[in-house]
Length: 477
Image (cartoon, rainbow, N blue to C red; front, side, top):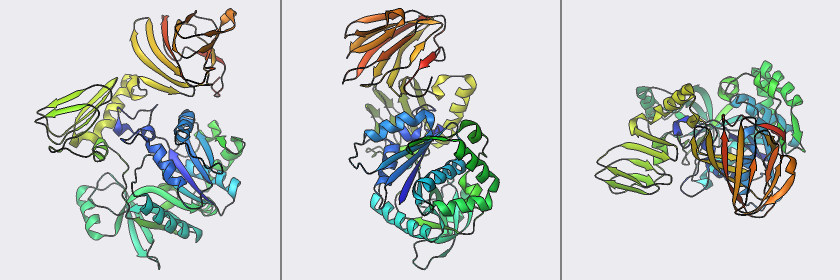
């Protein structure tokens, strides 16, 4: 059994304002309409011997991830989609260790884990599959396998793997060490030597080999994670919520530091397939074909006397006149303008927004929820107007607000509403209902098409935290 383990988390701060804490990088859609998460999932599913894909993600991203997979419309009923839900982020070592416990309990210690970060892009799927088979063969021999990318430039934004002797079949090399992101002169030396590879962050090993390595090199972390696993609760083996208290106490450490740098049975597969971690807007721009002036654009864009720019539009026209080497990324509530040499500093903007308490680091104007989405159309003192879209068969929680009243107007579909003492009733298209502050209420879509409504909030305080949930289909009450 080969189990691809999709690691899906992290805010992707260098790709703000599209990637945000509530809408991280794996959910970003590329020009073909697929998200990075979907592409990673398909890359894992298509490997030989796969019967299960395990996604390790934050609990807040669970329902969105399920929707992403459902949109792929895969027909293989034998394929298991399983989830391991983190209450907080604790880096890759605790996540992968708990994933190994889950795979061991389901398939035994001989099962092989193929660890795939959900924010990578690989177009050469045939070449990738060939290298996975090299890694699986080495893992079956008790090796801890990592994938190294043959460098094409002296890149200072990646860690490197120092390589030793090649295996008899030439498919793997011994790992002599892991190197942090180097300076440019050092990176140039690495490139010239031919003995260094980019560290991709992808791994392959059997559950038994990995667990033995943790017991040998991180016994305290292994014991604490084992206790955490015993305290975690699952849903028929498909979805496991990690115990919050014990998981938060685990060391925040990467698998490189915890295991790979210490073990003596580590090998690397030198990978020649194309690979990008899309770590900046410069990297994202390379996915778009340039025009005659080397400008690259997505969306409705017009350029005059401009050269070497990347312009990413969302829903309005952008015109660029007489500018060179700019990165322009426009979203409904935030605009980024940067010289292309400064794109690694975008994370500083996110840090500043956090310090200011500005919601733009965390949420888009349109916010995904398990039941659908809401979009803030307008907001002012003591009022807020939202567009709410509820999926067929979905419902919001039974809830109450202390500080605001709400007026709901159905513009498409049909709503089943619970509203205080009025109880339950239907609201049709072009009808409305008013919900005073303090009234228990609920909204449900009983139909087969999306329910779209406008919500007008009025009150002294309109924060999203003014909510008391009494019952919820998604475990939030």
